[in-house]
Length: 189
Image (cartoon, rainbow, N blue to C red; front, side):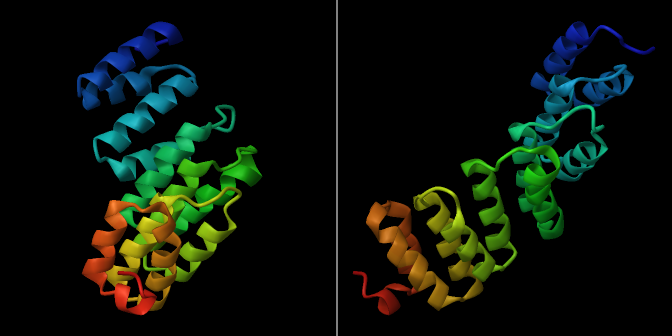
């Protein structure tokens, strides 16, 4: 039976998802006539938080144009793409934010893209993105790159990331440096 009361439907949807009743939440969501942004965000975040990454991406792709996604929607989808290793989908989403929906990427969106590029082994693109962000990179971005450089054996990019990271005096950086044998290249002790 179709649900037409959005307020009640959203409250029920929130209750189902909060208590882990994903199947019931999906049935309710599918019965809502014209779900609003609250309903879409609730389902997106639930899928993402419970590890149903493909479903989160598919749900996002099914959002009608009339329900304009907001920053949170894009962050959820970018996180899902990163965890699944869907580089093409992540790049499309990141580009679509600005050009299709007029949403300027914020630091969390950039962090998701950096993570996605780093995990995918696109270290040069990752470093370029860090250096061209519209705000000053923080330790988290450099740690993601340094970790990926260590995993992918790219000591040159790792050395540049390490040098940039040392100004933050972040403990994780020194552990990564020690494990990657990058200190020899950077002169960092």
